[in-house]
Every structure is written in C-alpha cells, then in structure tokens.
Length: 508
Image 1 (cartoon, helix red, strand yellow):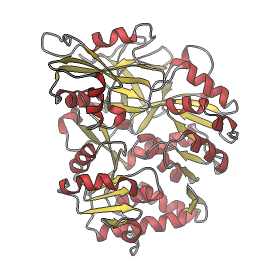
Image 2 (cartoon, rainbow, N blue to C red; image 1 turned 120 degrees about the horizontal axis):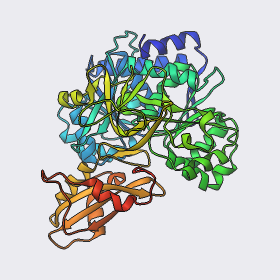
Image 3 (cartoon, rainbow, N blue to C red; image 1 turned 90 degrees about the vertical axis):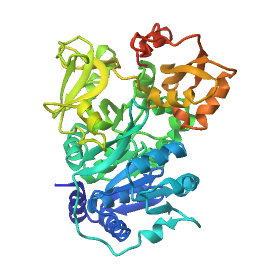
Image 4 (cartoon, rainbow, N blue to C red; image 1 turned 30 degrees about the vertical axis):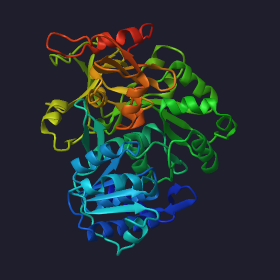
C-alpha cells in the first residue's frame, strides 16, 4: 500500500464524501482524486519524473495538497518550503533539492523575482493566482489526467535546520507515514463523523501528517490558510471540528483573545499539542478554556515523521506526569544513552533520547555522513534531545544535546544566526543561545564581542535583513569574551545558566 493508492481507495469507496474544506470550497474524495490526476499530468508534461523534486512555497491551500499527492503519484517528491524564510534561504533549499519545479503563492512572487536567476535546476516557476511574469497554476494544471501510479519510496522531503547552520532535507517515505497514521487513527479515536483540522503549516511535520491523515481516516480535513487563533476558533465553530493539533504559543494566544473565548468550541473532542515545551499555566488555562475537550501531548521530530510519544488524556491532571512527554507509541521503542559513549542508561538518568520505530526517516538528502551519525546500527535514531525515562516508561525532556532553540514551535539553530552576525564588520566574536520567554517559550539572544561601534538594534536589524525574523535575536548582550574550552568550543551551557536560573529545567 502507498499513499496515492490509499487516495484511490477512498475515492472509490466514498466518492461523495468530503475530503477537504478550504475557505469557502469543499472537495469530495472523487473530485480531489481527479484533480490530483490532472496535476500529475501537468507535472509529467513539464518533464517531472521519478525521483525529481517539486518545491512549494506557499501558505496552506488546496493546490498545496494536490501537488503533494500528484508528485507522489508519478514518483516525484514534494519539497515544502517554509514561507517565513528570507529569499536567500529559499534559494538554498530549492537549489539543494535540485527542484525541477517551484510553485509559489501569489503573495510570494517577490521571492521568485529575487531568486529566479539563481535556480540552475528549476525549469518552471509557477504562481498560484494571477501573475504577469510566471505560469499560472490554474492554467498549468488543467491537463489531461494521468492515471498511472508509479510512486517512489520517498513521499516528501521536509527541511530541518542543521547544527552546521544549513538546512537538511529529511526524506520521509510512504511506509513512514503508513506507520504513524494507524496509530493516530486509533489513539485519537477518529470515526466517520470526525473532522480533522490542519492548522499548522504544511512545511511543518504536524501539518503534513495531519493533511495526509484526513485521507487515511477517510474524513474531512479542514485546511487553515495560516495558524491564526481567531480564524482557527471560527473554523472550529463553523465546521464542527473534532480534532486539532496546536503548538503551545497558539494555545496561549487563544486564551487572551475575546473572539476565541466567545466562539462555540464544543465540537472539539481532542486537542493535541506539542512541537515545543509548554508551561503549566498555559496548559491549565487551555483546559479551562475547553472544559469538555480531552488533551494529549505528543513529542517527536521531523526525522521520526512526527509523534513518537503521547501523554494520554487520563494523565492530564495535577501531578508529576503533567510535566512528562508521555509514553512511547505502541510501535516505538525508546531508550536513553550516554551521548559520548552510546552506553544505555537506567531509569532516572539523563542522557540522549534515541528511538527505534518504523517512523524513522529514510535519511538526509545528499548527506551521507549526517545520516550515518543520526541513524545508528540496530534501527535506532538519535534525537539530539536529552531527557530521562521513569520507572513506568514516561519520558521527561530535560535539556537539548544539540544547541537548537525552539521558539513558538519553530526550530532555530544558533550556528545559522552566528554565521550572519559574524559577517558584521563590528562583531569580533559571538554566540547565540536560547533564553526564557513568556510568549514564545524561549527566544534567541546574541552574546557579542565588539571590535567596532554597533548597537543592539543595529545587530538585530542586520539579522532581519538576512534571515527569517523568527530566527533573529530578540536581544543582544555585549561582553569582553565568549567562554570557550581548550579546543575552542563555545561553552554554551555556561552562557545560558544565568538566564535559566530558577527554572525547573533548561527548556521553557
């Protein structure tokens, strides 16, 4: 079984059932399957074939989903691109993936203008909407349907930033998704009457998984253009959504907005949350906002096709387990190892979390060494996160082995920000760390050694011209020297300690 074959089965079994709801449009499984065939025909006519990459730069939309299934139907692979990235970052990802086609929403045409001449592998630039410069998606995709199914092993390639500062393409297969989706179907108690909201961006593993999950479950997927708290609340009320995944920062905003509190959210049966740590205040506030809704925390990575643990609704009551990331999925094994030696550690000892699951990625695109360092012998995957397992198998996230910062559910790697700062003529040395933030969980802070005149705001603005804003430092401290060990490695734990003093753990 593969995911495009699964779509054909759903269209044959339930042709008139709604597959997706997007803004004012509803599309049935039969119509969606036909549209996927038409887009597959357009891809073939454009020279896309087995193993080719198709990049998409847009907010969530029906064409986004059509392209996901259409590419897979002919053995190509969709490459979702984070629409919050700067032009240079988009160009790197599209170039690294060697994407033959780049499809962008009309509001991102300025990005196409900025990078069009730098994409040596990209043969077609297509805009969803009206454009005088580029091919129009509606006209381009209006082709004779391609009914031939020829799926490749890899289904989608999502980019996750790496510790070197450059994003890595995470290759996820049909089998990866077909390992996690039955678990979701069972653990979330999905039924024929369920409606699943896709609130997270489709470049995010949660958005991608839930988009495909609607087809797997044969239920309507309610697609949100972007994760707007008021829009989410109104759509839950209008479409009687039963299941949704939200990141903690959205849960916090929803509690503060009168329009959300006034909305009828009574249809919501299960709210899943994860992607970044959550405070007790935000979680308990969300539970008060939704007293008739069950809550389930999930923990996972892009590299594990999303969730590998879950904290059941029954554990959402005051107590130690409320601080836990839950227990392993039924098909997942977890253990804790010493990150230096690889030795297994006993319950209660903090070390690196590793997982063995059929959800583990195929590997990193064109990065053999990084793949080898992450996928260990015996089927284990290094998560890069530190934590411990208690005697009952509950996982507690303690810290990060890697230096990654998670701000509002977005992953930020300090090396990428440091590389930009070091290009400023007044910066002699720097380090970027995550510090506590009440709104975003944590936020990047730059610690800088100056060799000329510059200010905090100047350095923040300098980063904002070159990076997505969510990656940029929200504050800058100046110092005489960056602490390093004898080999020159920055002692980031030492830098972080004063800012995390009084916190119960080193992630917020």
